[in-house]
Length: 152
Image 1 (cartoon, rainbow, N blue to C red):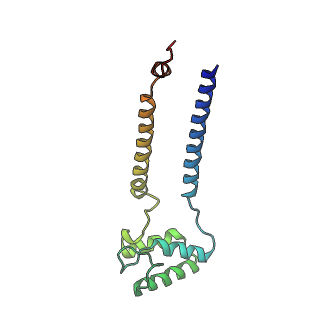
Image 2: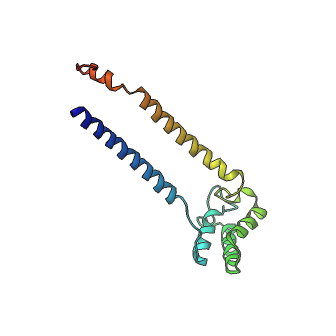
Image 3: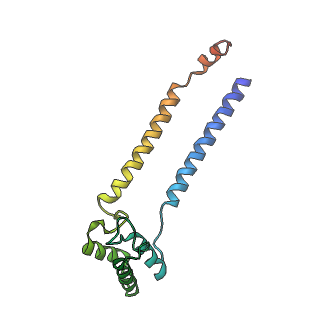
């Protein structure tokens, strides 16, 4: 009787861990997706955070007080006030300053793939490690004989 109870508790424990892992993945996926901000101030702040300062090493124009960053911040604000879309502003910046002018990858083309491939490989590695460890665990019969009990 205790063997059945032990298997049920083991199954419940594994199910709980699987559910917890699925919830963690779901929350991380949901939390990493950000919608476009609606208000002009929020759009300007968002764009300022992803446009690289032309005179700086790896700072956004929001983080820099370099004259070129200040000028570019004013231009971005003007474009948003004129009704430009975020994509149009980003396109203008990349046309003027080059593809490296954005601190985030573009949502089209190879840029997104270059960020998703390592995440996918890590996920596959974790799944492979879990499968390997699961396959290596001793069987129920081997555990019974190792504990001094009978395998039958």
